[in-house]
Amino acid sequence: MTLLRPVIAAVFLACGLALAPVATYADKGNSGESTESIHPAIQQADAHREKEARRKQYLLFFPIAVVGVTVALIVITRRK
Image 1 (cartoon, rainbow, N blue to C red):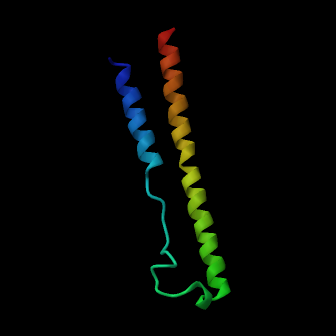
Image 2 (cartoon, rainbow, N blue to C red):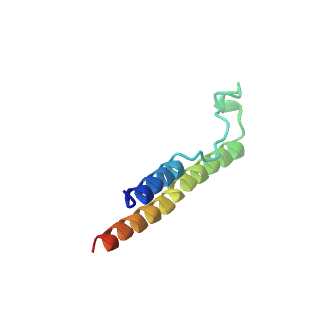
Image 3 (tube, helix red, strand yellow):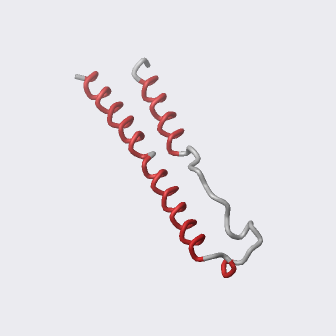
């Protein structure tokens, strides 16, 4: 039972990190403007922001993996 508590805590932490909201930017459809009237430099900046948001989301998986490996190592070493 005592071994199950850290595993459950790690699962909750990993789920929290995976589901954490990443900064999102306004949708082009919500602004009321068509995409043709937006300056190309602004479109390029919006695309860059979207790429950054995706990178941040992928960066969250690193701590999740670290937590998973740590819990796995703890479980393996305690069983021996």
